[in-house]
Structures are given as structure tokens and as C-alpha cells.
Length: 452
Length: 89
Image (cartoon, rainbow over all chains, first blue to last red; front, top):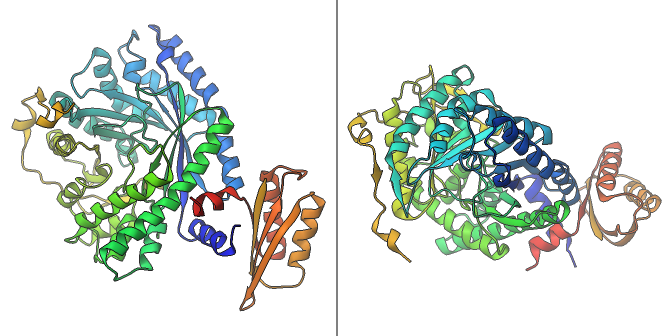
């Protein structure tokens, strides 16, 4: 029998600690939409997306009511467009992005991910056209998100793509300069990108996936923080145990919503992504968890260890709660979306270099970091190369989502609005790396790529 | 299908009456009630059977919320699964 204490605990987690199901993301394959004619292709993808996701938003809202737990975002991910549109006879993929945007608006989702290319080993003609279309595509659309995978542990790092992406990020920033370069907030560069990640901006529907699938991302930094407050000052075993237990409960809620959504929509359930994704709200921050763990600010010595503990125990607790755990699963450390991280940057506790070190043990990478508008494309490529190398060598996913804010310099504030938050522009090491980036070619895969 | 109703707010006369008569009108059967009052604050949990209810759970959720707003307490109806799945392996 359910007890009053349990009911109160659950509702307190929802009401006071910001427990939520962060996103229900429907993955849709666009493979069967392929066509050589741009108009026909656009019509095909529009029709398929709007038909498949017709009831997605309504179902999300119904479940929200039924269980009394907020479901913040309803989103769509599609087959990387560079693959689906491989046979397309066109110079620019911008009209495809516009078709995706229209479809997203029609079904009422706030983001659609998959304006993507997977170029870890090399670029096809289609891949190159897609990448070159990114700046304009992100400037003229509202809801389209883009990602490019430039490396993997098996194939090494495509340095031509890394070089190109430095330029593409700069162009994207310039094309949306009037809106604090917001285009870059919708663009991620990955190493070891995953095929079933429900979180934007890096979500796409992988080629190994089925026709249509429901992936759910849960989050509850506030719940973990509160649980840790109860065991303040106790040893690390207790700390880890507490995170595990909490992660278990949080993930179970996601599992329930995922199963119900999949049943109602008649679409198979894919994975639960058990991540701790912060929001700009107070009490919904990863940096606050570090503080409860005993650090004055995020970035203080010990932060990397604290993050490693957090990430590992979130996974340990979560895997017991659902058989299909996937996506990125772990703690996200975006700067602009976490008020504690923003404060740490403003107080000088957190630097880009410390963030890079932290990405060795977090679930993704350098995320939502505003950098000076005059940062050169080579410097951006250098940062991407560093981050991709961390992912490649450590067999993990890493990503870069940097925003060179045109017209702004170190210390100035940038406002992205909504869940994307706000951030101070952070200093970047600007010593030249052009000679390194300009080499081009591919960094060979590390020795453990021969594991089989 | 079972639902859990929670009522939270400053104690006053007629809270239970209001909730119960609404449930009766909608053909929702009450299976269990537990209630505490801590320093004037009313805290109630009801387990109800909504399988024969005249309206869908989404509508019941909204209507109960409105009743809560009228009498100045917070009334929540949730499907029991969220509690079962979170607290039972």
C-alpha cells in the first residue's frame, strides 16, 4: 500500500526540488523520404514528420496531468539530413532546414534535431554541402538544431572537418549577431556522438535505429542536491549511496512516462537518458551540488573529483531503474543554463581550462560557453580538437557548443532567453594555433580502436 | 485504475465534504483516506478508484484543481503508478 510519506516525498521532489521529465523526444527515420528533387524531398519529410508526431505534444501534456509531473519539452530528432538527403540534387540544404522548421511548428515541438552530418572519417559531397549550409540554416530557422560528428575512438579525428567547423561556428555567430549569436546555441560539434540522445542541440535519429522511437530524458539536479544536504559532512560512501538512491527514483519516473508515452503513441520505447541537466532556475543547478559536496564554488580544486563521483553514481543508480539506458546519461555542465556555474565564472572560480578538465569525467563536454566575438576561427578549431581528443582517447562522448558573441568581450553578459539562460563572456587562451589546425587530414585513431 | 488525491492547505470547515461530494458526483469511489493536521495545516491523502469515473483522469485533475482554488487549498490527483514505480522495485 502506498503511504502518505511516500506520496509526500514524490510531490515534494516535484514541487520544491524541480524534478521533471526534461524531454520526450520522438526519433523519426527519414531514410524512405530520399529523392533527387528538392521539392519532393521537402514534402516527403514534412509529411512524414507531421504524421508521425501528430499526437506527440498532446500525449505529453496528458501524461503530465495524469502523473502530476512536469514534462518540460516535447521534441523530434530525425535521421542526419546529410544522409537522408544524400541523393538530393541541390547546392544548398537551407530549404530542407526550413521544411524541418515548418514541420516542427506544425506539430508544436520546440526543437527538431538532425540537421546533422557524421564526418568522423571523411566528408561526402552531401556532408560538405550540409555543413556549408549550417550558418544560414540556423539564422533563418527558429527550431532547427544542428550537429556535426568530427571524430570517434574507432576512426580518429577528421581535422579537415575540425578546421571547417571553426569557420562555420564563426559564420553562424555572425549571421545571428543581432541576437547575441544565438545560432551557435543550436550547433554542437561532437566526438563519439550517440545515436539515441534525446537532448538538444545534439539529438539525431541514428542510422542503426528503427523507424520511429520514443526516447525520454529525465533530470533532477535539485533532487540530488536536497538529498545530499541531508548527509552533509558524512563520508564518501554515504555520499555515493545517496546519489545512487536518488538517481534511481528520478529515473523510475522517466521510465514510467516513457512506457506510457510509447503505449499511447503506438511507437516503441527506445531509451531513458538519465542525465542531470540543469536549468537557469535557482535550486536546479549542478554547481549547487558541488557546493553541497563541500566546495566553495564550482571550479575550486576538487571539482573534477566531485563531478566524477556525481556522474558515476547517477549512472549506477539509473541502470537499476531501467533496462534501456542510453543517450548521454550523466551530469551536464553547461555554463549559461546553470546559475551556479554562471556565478562561479563571474567570481573567477571557473575557467575554460578547468571546464575542459571537467569534461573528462562529465557526460558531454564544453557546453553553452560564451566566448569573445573576436575569437579567431583557428582558436575555435583548436578548442574543438582538444575536446575531440579527450573523447577519442577516453572512449567517451565529448562535445563543443561555443558561442563567439559578436561585438562582445570578456566579462560582458549575454542573454539567450528561456532554458538557454544567460552567461558572462569567458576569456579564451588566444595564442595562435593556426599552424596546427592548417595541417588538415586526419588524426589516426588511438591504439585501443583495435579492440574487437 | 487507482488515483491518489492529495490536499494541502490551511485547515477549515468543509474541505473533505467538498472533495467527497465532487467525487461522488463523478462516480469516483474512495478506497482509503488518511489525514493529519499539523499546526493548522491540513494534509490529506485519498486513494480512489477512477476506473468507473464519468470523466477522464485529465478532466478530473483540472476540475479538482479548480475546486482547490475556490476553497484556498491545493488539490492534486495523480495516477498511482508514479508512486508505485518510484518507491517499489
